[in-house]
Length: 161
Image 1 (cartoon, rainbow, N blue to C red):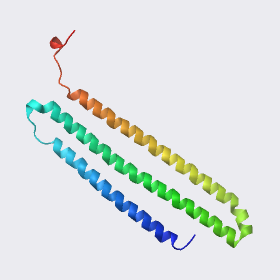
Image 2 (cartoon, rainbow, N blue to C red; image 1 turned 180 degrees about the horizontal axis):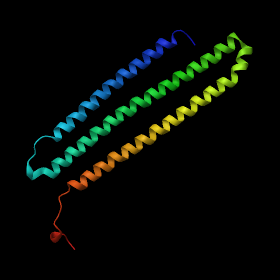
Image 3 (cartoon, rainbow, N blue to C red; image 1 turned 180 degrees about the vertical axis):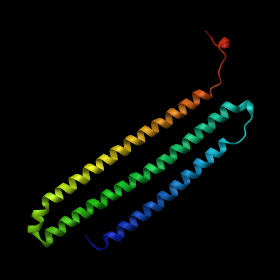
Image 4 (cartoon, rainbow, N blue to C red; image 1 turned 90 degrees about the vertical axis):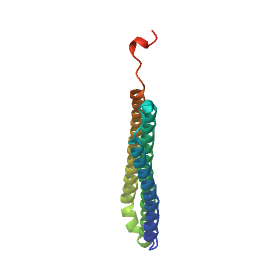
């Protein structure tokens, strides 16, 4: 592990957080704007299409907000995995260079540590993917339900039989 690694890691994290902060603010702004546009008074003759557009716009803005959060989470996860792996390799190398007999004793601990980190990383990625898919499907279902509810109802005596 080298002295310059830690400041470089902090700089990388700071830049990533700054970039994602801007993306999240933009997504939140667009979400609030979509919500406020949906609150504007509408002409009663055009209610279903306008409400439908407002619902779609709000759901789309919500989806973009979710994507911004997921993107930030994924990037931070990848960065943490990258640096943890780097520091594990550096520690293993440093141990082997300074005390080869001690490195042999610690070898099972290094293998266990690397395996544990790999398993936890895989599990957290799977959980993240699962939750994103479920939430994305919920957004699509909400949009579909809203569209169905907003369709003008045709009285039963006017329907084709």
